[in-house]
Length: 600
Image (cartoon, rainbow, N blue to C red; front, top):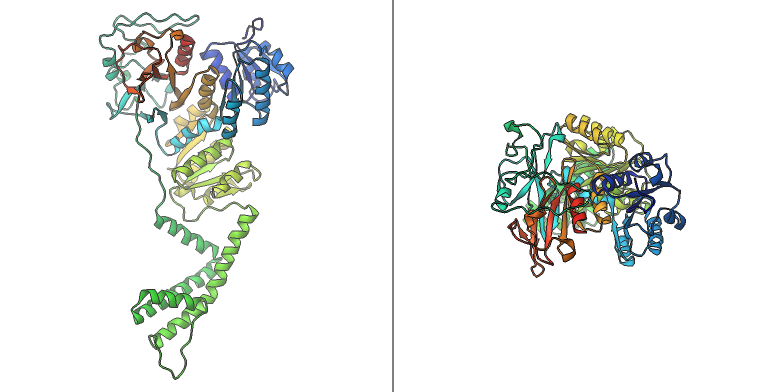
């Protein structure tokens, strides 16, 4: 609970899931005082926030005004996070906060990222983050079975789970003792044997820098960490096959664009569907076969392919020139005349049908009607729910080159217009979910992502998809941790992610004034990749890299001098930091909080 006598360290405005996670991050992991401003004490996640902070540290007001900010002691606060409301209201609140405290650190949740960049330049000490943009890559990676990755100095580093031994480009062990049925036994950033041990061979650990209010894990004389459990069973060894997650470099991802033959096949299937009923389709199919036979006849009689194409197309359009009776013919004789007549009469059916299809497509485009999914689509991804997260995920998958089919029950959702602008097919309305999944060809897709803000609706979508396609990959957006654990135990070929759980570490780190490069997840556990610059005020200049590390919390994976362009990966941990050196940490949330307090 905040000490209201001296004012809070940070102010969090909002009562949504992100605000709840952010308050927990700041109070439990960074151990700072927080005041929350919520619209209503009884709605959304305000009760949970009140339970974390205490009633005296929660202010309930419908609108954030200058008087409200003064009552929250904004003049003495170190930072304020605005994670609820729309972009416009968040910008107004940020301007009021900096007018009262020009030095305050401001973190805004902004959906419009371009506008967010302008706001960052407008305000003195500001970071504008998008919750959906921060979390979307993790959903895409889970759906496509791609490892999570973070860009560090022009290279991508990723997590590989369930490895045996040391893969190529091995950097360090992120987690061991991984048991999918009991994720509580997982250890993050263990001081495990292997290459990590060779980094510290012969290095004498210097005494840790004291940090007020913090304690560090006990280190035995041989530099190994104090045991976490009493288990001595060999199965608990971090080197047991399939129980580790390691950090490694990730190769570039190639586009998954379907081949031209696949796209042509889809168009032919759609054309058949547009031609109408089954009986009429048979008539058109017969006419098409007749035209094809006529074309081959003309080609055979004249022995010229280009001429056969030219003659057949003109005949179908009704522009044929008949032979004159009594004059010598330059064509292939009677058989060619028969072929030309057949092409002309069949063209009478084709031209109106093609014209009707073109008019229907133009009318749908002008009316803003979403395109229906192709009946021949294969290997696509189905996105259920077109909120902020759903639109971001659909956009990322589309940019990779993988076909996407979207489902949104609310026909007025603004995400529909966004994906329609990318010409993605969308199914809308209150039709039974089973029917919509059938139309989305879920039995032929590679993954289904349920991304609404309702855990129950996402679970329903996953169950319906599994009923139609038992082996399909399912990724759910779930907030409740216990619910997600049960899903892992019950479902196979499934994954769950929480938007607030993925975004909260980045928002908390930005609020503390440090730049987090990205997050890496091992199931629902998150490890952050952060970049720091050593300076004299931090107290780290002259100390070894090994002294910065804390088993289970912090590990140094790269370092760069102020004059170098590229990072040195897996550096010598006996090396001492110099002023201006940049180093990259792999850290848990608690470890990042402790390290941030150390260097602040």
